[in-house]
Amino acid sequence: MNSKIIKSIIFAAAIAISADGNAQNRITLHSDWTGKKVDVLYDGRLFTSYIYPDDLEKPVLYPIFTSSGVVVTRGFPRDPRPNERIDHPHQVGLWFNFGDVNGLDFWNNSYAIPSDQKLKYGSIKHRRIIEIKSGKKEGILVTASDWVDSKGNVLLKDKTAYFFSGEGARRIIRRTTTLTAQVPVTFTDNKEGMIGLRVDRAFEEPSDKPEVFIDSKGNPATVAVINNEGVNGVYRNSEGLQKESGVWGKPTKWVCLSANKDDKDISIAIIDNKKNPGYPAHSFARGYGLFAANNMGSQAFEKNAPLFSLSLKPKQSVSFTHTIVIQDGHFLTDKEINSIKN
Image (cartoon, rainbow, N blue to C red; front, side):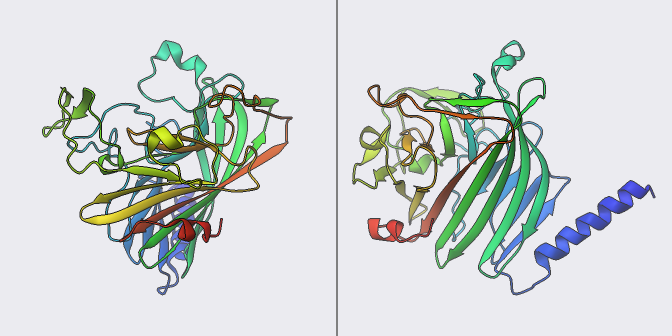
């Protein structure tokens, strides 16, 4: 057997042992190099997976489940489900990127971009797993990625630490991304960023406009009369404003999205961190199911606000921390959200 293959097998075994060596661990992480993913399980049930397949322009957490196994992320484009919208194929699971880095759009890049337009877009390429650790109260995954242009030139080195935890019917994902410039880099005020989540149909706001959805046979179909059965999502921010019309574009400490799905009251909250540049983040939350918080968009949301700009010299770094809370069984209260460590 090839020595490189033997070394790979040994290394894979070592990771598996470090992840699963303690049978008492409630949160276990399993690395699957062939599948290009890391599964995160809570009490043996899939919580989420960190995936980095070749057909995605960035690594993401997908899918994401509640404690009782209800999926909160949209299936399209990876695993389309009946009655789903088929817009914005770049919106997969939970991700982190931005719409203007040295003039390149990292946010909107996907398989749908024509090849002759790719020069305008950037990608985030997974490079390696730095740490993977299971635990009784917390699971940890640390990854290394590169933010690159269409030619593969590296603009930023990305080190992201994911902390998976939870108690009872609550699940928590806290993630810190540190970006280190390899060339002079400027992040310019843009509405499309940064921490984003595309949610299941139940979490959307009811709509009355013609849209394209997946039909029962898995094919796209234009629907003139929208079936809003089970669609009941409601946004709320830390100032008490509600719905997309209230929260969109507003700077806020947190936004919570609540809905009933499969007879379960479920809330999802994105909490900003006080140490983040641009705190409090502007809410880039849409009724069609995009739930995002943007620390580097300001004038893009409020025309009279100061223009945001962040520049890094080579080897300079910047870090962002966000906490995502998934509550099953009841809707999160303001008091509960404000008490969560971030």
